[in-house]
Length: 97
Image (cartoon, rainbow, N blue to C red; front, side, top):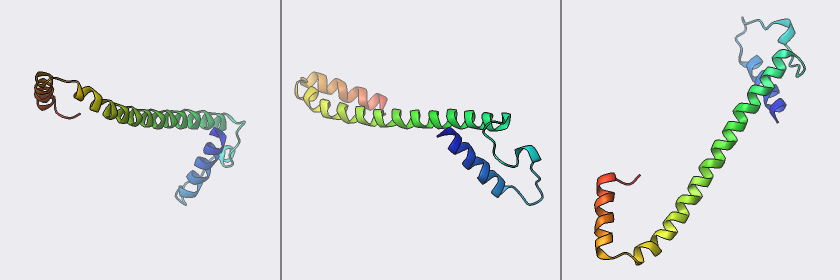
């Protein structure tokens, strides 16, 4: 996956480079075995890996928020009026985060 991304970046880079820009001969074609190619593959692997992890964590947070909302009904059903008043005061002070 990382090599495919690196190749894609390389092709887009070449396409978007201005006409007056000259690429060095040794890096004109993508070579995954060259130092430049190896570096680009590692960079893509890390960036892509971080993006996937962030997306996974965001999905997990969304799922946990949903579970908390479901549980809130049961918690509030067992609250006394004093507990409810206290919760309302805290929510007013802190705000809905």
